[in-house]
Length: 495
Image 1 (cartoon, one colour):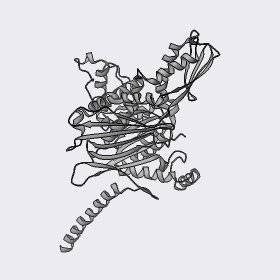
Image 2 (cartoon, one colour; image 1 turned 45 degrees about the horizontal axis):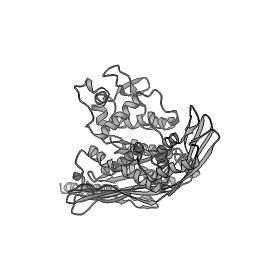
Image 3 (spheres, rainbow, N blue to C red; image 1 turned 90 degrees about the vertical axis):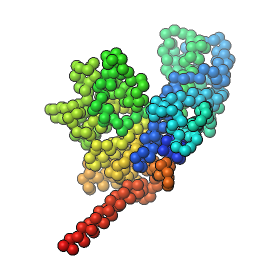
Image 4 (cartoon, helix red, strand yellow; image 1 turned 90 degrees about the horizontal axis):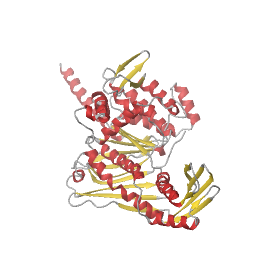
């Protein structure tokens, strides 16, 4: 079991959308609770888009850098002949890496383009009503470095460049070039193996080495900050699956077949989800490394399985079907739960890999309370595999079950096993728990007299996370019922 207890990313927000203020840390499991339209999805998207930006930056290597100039000078000094031959092992020490990181992260200004694509509006419209500016700060923290990138959006005037601050830096790096033989050339950056390249000829000249090393520094940044991939499952996923998945997927692949329409201007999340579904439909084999997770989903949640089925129609876009025993049915005839979960389950089957952040908006939608509790167990198993998850929920059942799993995390495995056996729970003592350190819960609290919200951490005690957000609503409903019953009792006594 692999659980990453480190929070690799934190976000601070001021005056963005309905959120007036807030600060969150992305833990292996991060949960947002609060009223509708309080900003939960806004915040989820801000985190998701930043991770998307970080992954796209690997294609934007700074063209000019003092660090690269020093690297080239070091190569000239260490390789006076101008090349390296089999059997050579060269060590370089290059200073100025902080300057390179600043240039690297300054390329992240295209985050605003993603904002406009996802929210489908001008940047100024994302500023909280009555405020003149908004600010978003991201902090990445790794074992060796920490960097803060701050963005300001102005209602009037030109939006300034992002502010980059290296809070903990790495001034110099050690680069090792190990050319063992004609077919084995390895490059290490501070002892991290980042390349194994086969060369068809030797010797290898300085220019080839430079071209090979440059992108490796981007990989080094990703490793030291534990930068992950990300996938977002929006709340409209079931509507997309039921109403237009195959049509829009065909349009994405063959726009000329549909009167020239295309998806370039359509919602970024729609395009991302459709692209992922198309890629998954082309896969031939289910991930063997993930069979236990898939089996848990099929046995405990679906009571069957979801998969793609070739139909030979609509430009060969496969249908998504539910299968059980010897029969199958299209999702339009199946339970609403199946269309709701289809993108998530198919992702786990065909595209899943660890070190990914999964964003799920309202995972409880269309699920019976018992199924919501099973979804919480699924989340525990996913984060044990090394993933992070960010979920926004309105479900008392889901949140309560997560709380139970956190309490189980305070027991050792022997205690859990004895508890499960004593109560005849079909649980796994090595999987069905979450440690308190792995979870952060945030509630969105309305500011008195306004339509804006502040994001606050939910406190914990010996009983886990304090569930006032949901308990108060339940108590209010119970008290209301009591008042109604009192009136009915009085009417009966007067008859």
